[in-house]
Structures are given as C-alpha cells and as structure tokens.
Image 1 (cartoon, rainbow, N blue to C red):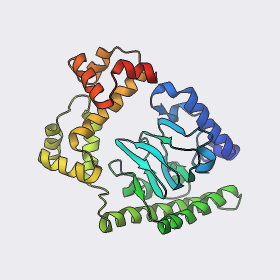
Image 2: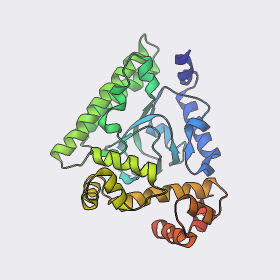
Image 3: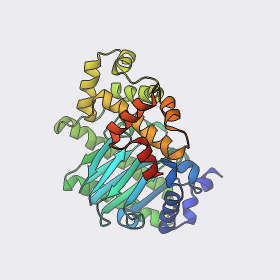
Image 4: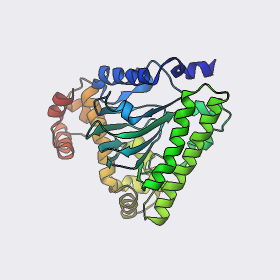
Length: 314
C-alpha cells in the first residue's frame, strides 16, 4: 500500500507533474516560502526531468519553496541566480547542485534556454527498495552546512550525465526491477558526487564541510529569534568568536554575524508576506525590542523597508 501511495507519479506524465508544480507555485506564491509537503496534493517517490522541459513552463522563475525531497541538479548550459538556504550564488555551464530535504531554495534564470537534469527523491523510495536510510542521510553532500554547488570540468559533467541519462531512460521504461535499478543508479550518482566534492576540497582548495559549521547552523535554527551575538554561538560551540568567523569565511564565504543576520532576514521576509502582523509584532517575534531598530536592520540588509517589501511581494 505504501508503494502505491508514494508512486502516484506513475499516473502522471512528466509534463503533468511539471504542471502540478507550476499550479502550486502560482496559487501559493503569497505564502512567501511555499511548503510543498502541504500544498502539493500528489506525492512522489522520485522524479527526473530535463531542465529544458521545466524552465520554459515556469517562465524561468522558481519561487522560494521547501520539500521533503533530496535534489540533485546538473546544469549543462545556462545561467541563473540561485538561493539555497543561506547561500546565494550564480549558476553557469557545468554546475552541479545538491539540496538537502526541507531546505528553502529558489531560482531566477537569465534565459529560458538552459539544459540539464533535475532529479529528486525521498528517503522512503530507498527504504521501499531495501536500502538503509543511512546511505542517504549520512552523505556529506546532503549536510545543510555544505556549500551546495560545484563548478565542474566538461569531462566530469559528462561522467555525471551518463548516469542521469540512464535513470531518465530507465524511468521511461516498464522493465522488471525498475525501481531497484533506479535506486542503485541514484546511489551511484551520490557516491560520485561525494567524490567530486571531496576532490574539489583536497585538490582545488574548495572548503566543503566542517562539523562545527553544521552544529552552528543547527544552533542558529534553534536560537536566531532570541540570540544574535556571535559570542553566544561561539560559547555554545566552545570556540573563540574569531575562530568561528574564520571557519565561516573559509567554508561559506560569510562571517558568522552575516550568517545569523541572513537567517533573521529570511524569517522576516516570510512573516511580512504570510501574516497580517504589524511591523512591531514581527519585530517582537524576532527578538527586536524596538520596531524602528528592526526596520533599520531590515532596510540595511535588503535595501527596502519592511513596508515596501510587503507591498512589493505581498
């Protein structure tokens, strides 16, 4: 019974699945951050699409949303601005992108002529096909503190492309053991992605993952509306504030204070769009004792006042 519930995409074509996402994006844009687990009626164990089939249908805009799915995207060609959690970066040719489950992400494409692959899947798909959960959940490339993208050489892109093409072809067939084969190929893809990120760290000087930063991100989620001082988080991590800033700059490109402030702004933007609360109520919710101070903070971070942001986005 669980398998049939999770494989509802068997009843929908790829085009129909994309249409379902487009409908939800348009209908619930005012949510600020769309929770697809609540808004999307259909549940999917996995999906694979060509980007050239998705982007024109969405008119090059993917609004902020989160979902209990893991995402792997390979951009062959194209340019875009991408936001994943606290990371904002450029997409260009030969970009590999991995997004953990429930992490907020959005995309603004420079044109509708990008190409590549989008694959997403949930953990139940692997459990249903007799794969242990830790094969996915413990993968370094799906840590929320990991820089979620990597610029590849053309040869590395082609190596990944071969696996995506295999999954795409297998998905279009009705062969015996189809789901097990796709699960195996996704695992192969993850192992290769892990190797590529690790190689980039050891050979090219990329900073990929650090357990202290993973813990720092968890502490931010638990405390950002109450604690904004770097010293508070450094004390919890038992390290010097200067060392925390060093680690953040090295691994994420942002200092610790900027990371905390970005999380506050993200929450403020969501509350401005999804609630009718006054600016003072939102300021109180986010731990600001003075609404004017909150407004100044928000304006400094976004170049817009809270009122102007609400009017423009809401």
